[in-house]
Length: 244
Length: 357
Ligand SMILES: Cc1ncc(C[n+]2csc(CCOP(=O)(O)OP(=O)(O)O)c2C)c(N)n1
Image 1 (cartoon, rainbow over the protein chains, first blue to last red):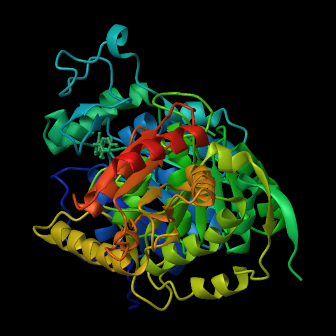
Image 2: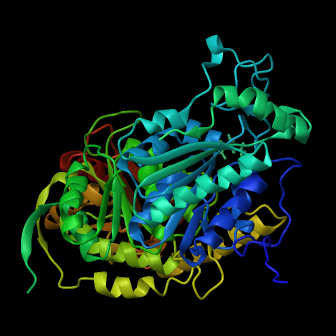
Image 3: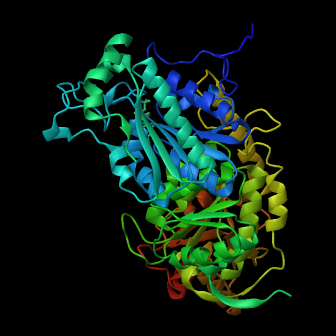
C-alpha cells in the first residue's frame, strides 16, 4: 500500500496558537495563504504586510518576512517594497475598516496604478479590533457598537462594495469574492487566493480577493450561527464569485 | 571633473539626494517645493531609480516606509501642510527604526497659510511632531550648496542610526537660484552594496529566519524596552552629531542665533556691525535636533546676551533659553506669516540691546 500525505501543517505557518476568538475567520484565512505560499514555493521571497486590525499580529503566525503598516496604509507600504524589490512576492492582508474606510484612497490608487500586488481583503462587516463598531461593509439593519439601532441608509449610507468599485479600474487584473461559511467555500477561497498570487508571479498586475469572514464575537452569535448569517444575509449584499 | 552650476535649492536637494544614492522617491505636489518633485520625476527614472507621484502625503510617507523596510535609501519631500499629514508615518518610521529622509520646504501657517517662506515648523520638526517619544534628526541648510551637501549627510545619518532625518528648508532657500559645486562622489554603487548589509531589511527569508518590521509591542514591558533603546540612541546622537557654524564668537558681546534663510540675514547684520566696530557674533545651528548646545559653552566669556532671530514667533528661542539656562539674557526678534525680519530691524534691535549691556 502506498501512503500519501494529504494534510499537514504548512511550513509558512508557525506552530503557535493564535489570539483570535472562537469561530473567527482570520485563522482560516491565514492558513489558506500559508498553504498557497507553500504550494507555489515562494516562501523565501514573500513579504507580507499586516494591517492594523484584529490581524495586526499576523507576523507572529506567518513564517516569512512581514511588515506592519499604519492603519489603512498597507498598500502604500506594499508599493514601496514591491517597487524596490520587484523580485519579491508582496501581499497585503487588510480588514474592511483598514482597506475600505481609512485606507480607501491608497486602495483605489494602488489598484489604479496597477501595482503588481496581491491583496487579501477580510470583510467581516465590523471593526473587530476596536470593539465591534460599524464598518463601511456593515449591512443595513445590522447592530454594532456605533449603530445601536441598526445601520440605517438615511443616516449611515449603504454597505460599500469596494470590490465592485475597484473592478471598474482598467489596471486591475483580477477580483473575486469568496466566503468561509462552509468547507466547499473554503476550498474555493483557497483557489482564488492562489490565482491572485499566480497573477503576481506572472507580472499581471493588481489582484484582490475579498473574503466574507465570520466575527461571532461582534455579531453576537454562536460560531455556527455566524456561518448561517453569512449564508443567509451577507451573501445577498455581497454576492460571491468572480467580479473581474 | 566636478561642475559648478546654477540651481535652485529645491533642485540642489533633488540632485544631492540622487548623488547620495536615493533609490526611491515618492511625493505629492505642494508649493514651494514643486521644483523638487518635478526634478525627481525627470531624473530618478533616468538614473534607473524609482519615482512615484503619490495620491497624498500619507501615501508618500508610507511608501517611503515600505521602500526603507525593503532596504533602499528612500526620500519624500513636502511643505508645511503636507508635513502635518506625514507625522503619523514619521512616528512609525521612528518606532520601527527605519532610515528615511524627509524634506520640508517650509511655508507660512497655520492652516493653508500662504506660500511664502517661514520657519514656523521648528517645533513640529524638533519635538516629536507625531505621537510618541521620538526624535528625527533635523538638518537646516542655509544655501543651495549646503542643501546639496547635506543630502549626503542626511542619508548617511539615517542609515547609521536607522532613524528619520528631516531637512528643514524654507520657500526662500527652495526657490532661490545659486551656484552649486557638484561633488564627484556618487554613492549609489556603494549604497547598493550596503543594502546587502542591512540585515534587518525585508528581502525574503532565503537562508535566514524571517525578518519583521514593526513598532507594535504589546507584551508587558516590551514597549518600555524599545523606548529605552531609542533614548540611548538619541543620547548618542546628541553627543556625536551636533553641527553649527560660529562667527566672531571669541570676543562677541552679543551673539545672534539664527538658522536657514534667517541666518543669511543675521550673518550680513553681524558683518555690518563688525565693520562699525561693534562686537557682534553669530551662532548658526545646522543640526536643529540635536540642538548644538556645544556652541553655547561658556568659552564665549565676553557675551552678555544672545539675540535669537527667526521667521516665527519664537520656536528655536526655547532651545536657546534651555541651553543658556538663565546664565545670559536671551532676546528675540521674529516675524512670520511670510514676513521676514529685515537687516534694519535687527540692527535697530541690536543697538538697543548694546546700549543696555
Ligand atoms: C489612525 C488610526 N485610527 C484608528 C485606529 C484604531 N483602529 C485600530 S483597528 C481599527 C479598525 C479595524 O477594523 P478592520 O479593519 O475592519 O479589521 P478587523 O479588526 O475587523 O479585522 C481601528 C479603527 C488606529 N490604530 N489608527
